[in-house]
Image (cartoon, rainbow, N blue to C red; front, side, top):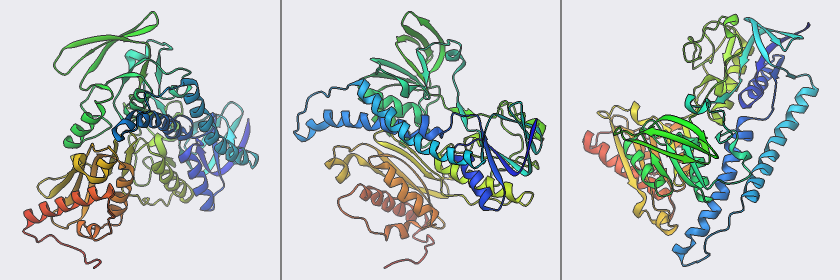
Length: 479
């Protein structure tokens, strides 16, 4: 067996893994990444990029239909599935191609090893059957995540049950579709396909849609999405079987009523799980719980207990988002290079966006983490917001959370037009530790959707002042 010794070994060459290798190298370590392929990040291959390409096509079709509201009558758009999916795949392959070019460069320099790694000791990895890699300092695990299928659907082993990894390989757009799961992936893909002509039914076990925890925003999101899809929340999948060229499904609703139906295609969108199986982490002194996650894991340093093992990106199961995977990789890579001297990594304000229409976003503190006796909530309904009405996109609700004692802006949840831009403004303000007053001193142009944010902040300030008698602490800023 061949032997290779490095300072840091990184298992996985996705977003987190490549950033971990680069960070370790920048810290002065000889670092290599190990990956069996296929190369290219989850985001580029089966995640954010192809889904946004599909959504872009759906938005184009929707814009044609909605043009009548402006006195422009274009008729029903003719959707050509082969052309739609062809563009999705061409552009996706272009994005992936850039990553493959970078991977080839790393491989030629001996910094990317082709093979599947597993632990044989805390600092030692077996790669395939003919290579042993010893990491003098530490190992970073950045193996990403895998689609999680409900057991009832997994048992079918049917080509008519697909997951989000396979949806972009469709040659035809189905006439009808059942989406199992109403998380970000389920509602994004469901609405996109609905706008391309599919009759979509969405089934989810809990009451949440798009991972929304704020009840008022959740109600607004359900109302908006239900205009284009049939939503069955708090409904449990009970049985499924393939019947001819369709899949029969039975589910039970919140009221106990049993419903059933058949669909030519079922999309399982019940999330992803860390891909830690097969690594033999126990040989590195890392024990897993019954959910397959490390029993001891420091979320600030990404270290597993006292072992020379760090977990980054989707494999860590923290925030499965690309910008978080980049940060994870940098934190894990630096700490692996410095092991055993590890430090907590700096984190950004939490930010998550779901690309439905209207868009859903979460920023900063979550609703269910608030103490409502010490916090206030301001809100704006977009039904009568000026720019939203101009664009005929006047649906949604924005709620902002603030501290009564300090006046600090704590977080927000929204379902709103241009939500991705509102969310970034809020995230920047929260990370900069601005108070509500300080944000209101910033310029707001007219007429823009951001004026809705200003209205919500004014409402928040009014409610905080009412609770504190106007004694809310404020930082001095601006005119």
